[in-house]
Image 1: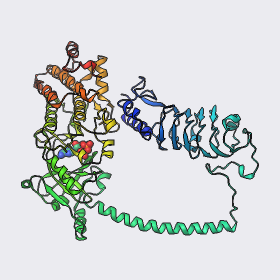
Image 2: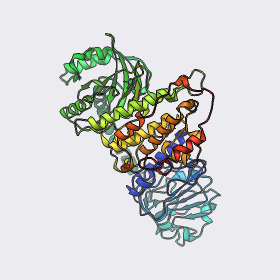
Image 3: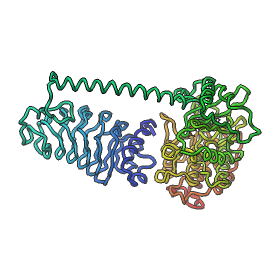
Image 4: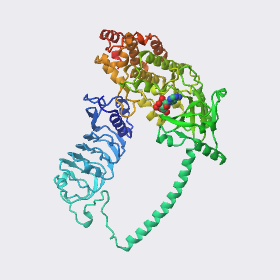
Length: 616
Ligand SMILES: Nc1ncnc2c1ncn2[C@@H]1O[C@H](COP(=O)(O)OP(=O)(O)OP(=O)(O)O)[C@@H](O)[C@H]1O
């Protein structure tokens, strides 16, 4: 909890990237949820933790096959131990320049090729380096760290003379044996030609060298110059073509938005470019209103509107466009779309648009052209619930987000989800797929409006799978599919965020003090830190304590690890609706913790499927 989230997030991503190339199902099931928590034993197999940071990776003899990316260790800055010994890992060796705390590295008995990386020379705490039995080639770099006590590069394809540094000479021949092209002490083979000297370019075999002044050298240089000039001309031509195509691509909303979120810009110029593109015969695209009677503006009006970036999301960026004629609309510029034809795209969008419910933000319209796909929504002026819940906490200006409001969010989202799960007319409509508090909006009357539903049906799945589903269900790690059951998990996480007031690790912006909410709450209940579970801002509302516990209980049932144990939305909603809303004014505003006897009573009451304490 004390570890800044960006470290933990980066380390988590780095570890997942490290094993991604192996495609080993073990990691999908074991490397989920929290990995290190304070000084607890690690939650993931094969890692070591200290103070919530990853300090060791030990994945030995696991039959791992595949490549790892050179920069895989870049974010594991606290790493002191690394062993991947006895697998079948191929490709170039890793870059260790960011792992200054490494003391032991064992990559022996694998299939690494290329040269020994020079980044190893910068590791001043390195005690043990074992690279034996790989396919490494080139010469041995000039290791001179006095810390080095164990060194083994035997049975590779290394070549040239063993460098004459005190450290490298202090190991015996068995550290070097099995490299036929390696010579000089301490190996047994003598260096008998000038060519067997150390090549400090690292990686090159010392073949016979041509003197710089020889005519061959001059001819080679001239030819090289001509080739470079030729390549430069080709590159320049391609660059001009690429630039033209990029300009065409950013015809509507250009990448200025991406550079600076809150930058107000006028998009009139781009409107001109659309017109120019149209004049050049390119398809201008269609602005379609779902309900044609609501057509309040044309494409030209939208292009002339001043726009403000609202944020960068998983499916694209959102902009608030203020039209001269009055209305304010939100434009979502989609990216990474599935390769759908225009008909398929419009069919899917119509399926999304058919979902009408008072708690769903309805789609106003869409724009489709070859290069741009936009969705248009009404602007919800009271913003999203994530900001309402977390922003300004502890500051005097903060207006408390009370229980009755949180309960109405829980209900509104539950109702919207029930509508999507039960009333979806089309079998093509995926469930919500990306439920989280920033996708729950409040309009000018504080009506709860769920947005971003169904977009996984139009966004390309490999990309979406890396990013979507903020509250990722455990099974999602394996099958990368959203389902009604994964929605229930997300809804459970959303309820937990509402009752605990804690930021969920999966949806937290970098630098936020976040927790893996499901594991955290289960642990909190098991270890009876019940008083700490509820957000202080609502815990003081004593008359509502019963309702809070009930909502917590419902949330925990939604967060069952096995999808089949999670309840259906109707059952969940029935329970949420049965929680009696208390008027916020009834409450005793003094700071108090949750009544312990009440907590015990709830925690020992068996729920229909399980007791809370047993759910994980
Ligand atoms: N109709 C709207 N009215 C007001 N604010 C909106 C509207 N739609 C989106 N937003 C806000 O704009 C910001 C960016 O939204 P966007 O949907 O692009 O990203 P996100 O919700 O953070 O992530 P994701 O793409 O995963 O949903 C968010 O803060 C969101 O709450």
